[in-house]
Length: 420
Image (cartoon, rainbow, N blue to C red; front, side, top):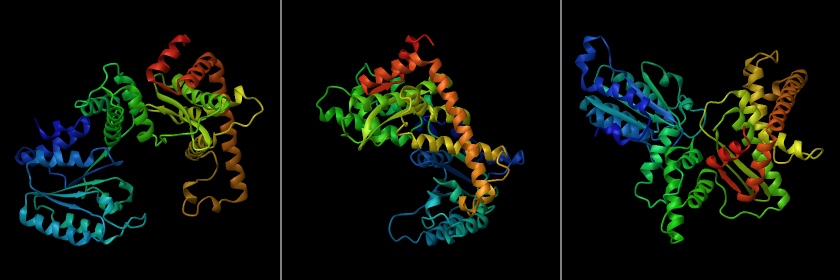
């Protein structure tokens, strides 16, 4: 088994990294074609996606020794260790210099592009040119790194890591479940849809928490309620105990979440991974988890407004509560679209350094009017969709009130019963 086979999924990324490994192991083949080994490669993306694991697989597969620089907590002279690493690399070549979590090397702020640590890395890369030293790095926040460091000639290969797709997520979960006693009734499709879009670290943690719950309850196997409990707590940070809602609060919360879910299912069939209602603190609320599928800005706006649309349809004349975050989300998407389409007559990008306060009263009024008009237009469209699929909305709401949490298979069954 090769080193990359130990990492589940991410086949396109593996292929790209194996190509660089092949160049390291078989330089003559590439030299004959006039191809030169990239100076460096950086793996970037959200925390917990397996960047460091993949980097270690690359190092193992390359067969080269490695000099690692990683910032530790507390007092840490990382600058001195960066400089020392590149000097040692020249002596030990061929070798890999591995800069793990490189975006953490400088002070934790957003204005350190000229930090000495990054200047030292740039100088180090330039100094080892033609010295058989390959520089490998990982970073969570790629855009925090200075452009001069990110440019070609320093990190020629830049590979972005995203959350595992549905197929990879399922493989990862099956791997983490291999040593756990899992009830045979568990629907793996429901499980993968519940956790779609989450990082490898979240998947591992959720499945382990479910096993802890089952063991503490002295169960024979891990069951779906254990997994749902772990998902709610770890993936959505929902408290273990929450206030019992009144029947009317449950109905409003269920209707709100069902509104999101119905529009999502209509626009993106099979896109709802889970729907749940419960009170967070003093406020009734819920979750509508959308699976990791491509989505247009228009779809995103309509889905965001689904809860408000459903509430206003069934509670005419009453203000729709709990919609502020949904409206804010739709507002931001609409504003971005208007800016991109030059519909405002001025560019919001131009005012970024000074922000909203730099707008004139005329510009503010024009922007607010344009956004509000689009919000109302999309809200009417969302209501039209819900009216067309009112039986789906009502059945989903009723079952959500009864069960609190509905999984992918539940949503699909209800939709099928409505003959849509």
